[in-house]
Image 1 (tube, rainbow, N blue to C red):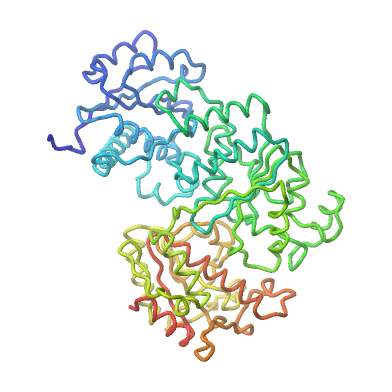
Image 2 (image 1 turned 60 degrees about the horizontal axis):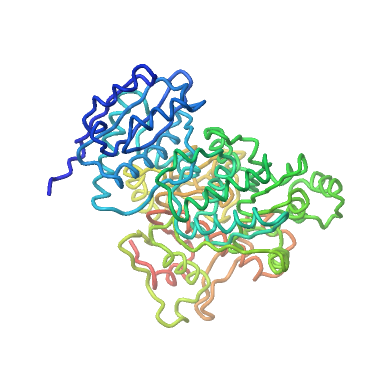
Length: 565
């Protein structure tokens, strides 16, 4: 069998014009109906389209009859004797995903049919793609490095994603609900890392794209059914008014930037809950719905009360009520285990809504963030709820795919994290609310541990991308919803372990989130919120989590189940 050489391909450039397009048959591989990948583009307008075909000339002639694609000026034909159909579909999908995040071009592509299937030598064909990318960089068609794109928000939250089977099933379930019901309330439930935010963005792009079926000749089965459902919905409901509610300000600003760079999406589609009263929505999709607020321990009671009056509600009205009143269809992405403040809408209200006869529930199970998989997610949940020693068969977490360690000396943890930052980027330190935020108004560090001076995040929004200083620690509000390659997590003195009872306990005097304690008299309720905070922090790491624990008792407990450095 002939060896696959990652540089064995040809990129030829042609004018995309009726008079010249026949020249592409000068390429041996297009002439002989090999599968090829192509890029149509115009540098002046920064518009491009990516495709693949075994009938390149016929496909180009179809594109020249298209009102938008016909305006593009050039075409790159990428061909090779080693290309097969699986390889070209994969390279096409990678080009789409990476070119969107590169930001040089706005793509005309829809987001249906992004391939992610296994095939012979797939890993080597990714090396082919990497070499194609470097060639396109030399041509100034793209500009960014692949690693930088991998770590970018635009790549992580892009609607151009290959979905898992349960995500595709969720899409089809919801499209059928949207098609067959005039009103609906639907919950999408899944733990951290199951791809809820990606699914929300994907769905909006899918619903707002006018698909040309000629571009999807290779689609079949479930994916083709999705497209047909979307087209039926569009024909029935005409122009859908869709909003994406993101309760957390930092994540909302990030998603707005993503929407700015995707054709058919606009930044003003991404809103806070208070903005829903500005129009009537066909569909409101709520990401991180567990962070919607009630009138309890919030900053601006006056604004909250004003919105309640506008909706004809009393003081008991919540942001969830506003969403229910502002839309025909509500899609709520919800995870009770990530509610971290008493100002969050009470879980019992969500439970009442879920139990209504007409409410439908869709569940996500695939773990997409953590390389430790569902086993790691379950392990953290059991660890922090002190179930490991009580459940038969539970014990130390072991994985060749995930790097989970405890450090007894903070400088060692930070040095190790610096190495990971150099290799992979996107490594950050985080902590629970274990220290006062004194650095906000002085040069005094917020905490000093093992001689290391630490400060809280210096910016409230987009902190993840604002610094790589590992002496700066992020809080839950600047990190919830984001991915990190490696996460450093400091457990402060507010969370301890009682050896006699075998339970984690909370020291309220060492907890410094004042709004996180409003109205809480039961220490067990506060414990639930604090446990949720640390679980959420420990779920941030894609490749690994490094832990430092202030309380010796808690450190000894963790050491029973996690290796120490």
